[in-house]
Length: 123
Image (cartoon, rainbow, N blue to C red; front, side):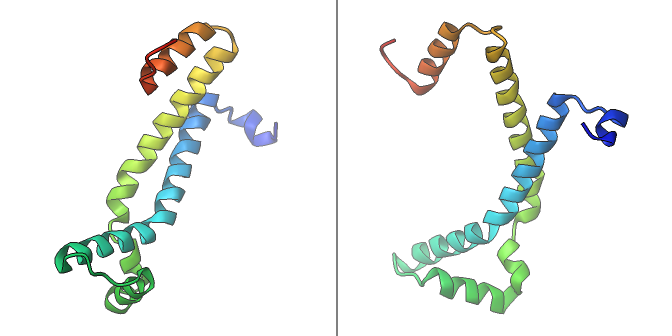
């Protein structure tokens, strides 16, 4: 561990929360332009009865009308939601995984829970 880790020890749970939030924020930012283009294509398809342009044409249209920032339309609300979701998901997953690895959760319980979640009828 480096000097910062010694001076400012961070519990693993907090690291997992921060890692999840950062990963979610980066992922949301990276996919927003594609999502904006997809949404515009869906709107165009609904408005024209199935006819729509290409993704490249839609991207060029958005950039011509709104600049590159138009490709990131809706990023604010997405960043208000996704980092919280991903941080909680990652921290929960890591907590359950660590409990399982320490033997605090019997493997049979994990199997039954997994089967229930995926809807498996036979165990």
